[in-house]
Amino acid sequence: MVETITDQNFAEKVENSELPVLVDFYADWCGPCRMMAPAVEKMAEVFDGQIVVGKLNVDDNMDTAERYGVRSIPYIAVLKKGKVAGSQLGATGEEALEAMIRKAIAE
Image (cartoon, rainbow, N blue to C red; front, side):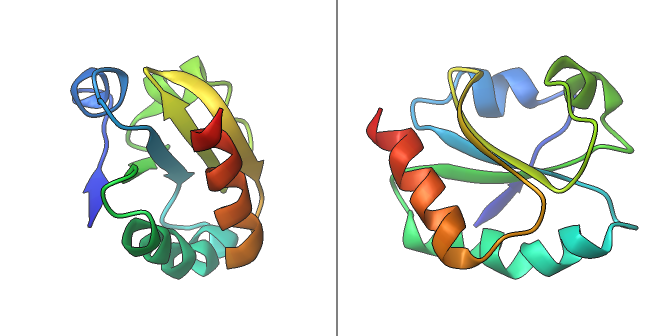
C-alpha cells in the first residue's frame, strides 16, 4: 500500500516511522513521475513489512520538498528517521530502484 505523505503528516509518517520510508516526490503534471508510479507501487509489494512507501506531491507540499532540496522530479528517497539513506533522481527502471532501496535499508 502506498501512503499519502503531506507537510502536515510528514513527522508522523516519516520521521517517527520505525521502518525506513521510501518517499516518491512527484507532481501530477510530471510525465516521468507518472512513468515511475507503477514501479513505486511494486516496491510497496516487494518490500512489504520492510519499508513504508509513500508519495508526496511537491506542488501541494512545498515546505517538505524545499527542506529536502528537491529541485527536480521524480526524486525518490529512502529516509530513516527523516535522514536520506539513499536516493534516485529521475526516472529509472524497477531493478535500479530495487537495488537502491536494498542498499539503503542494509546500511
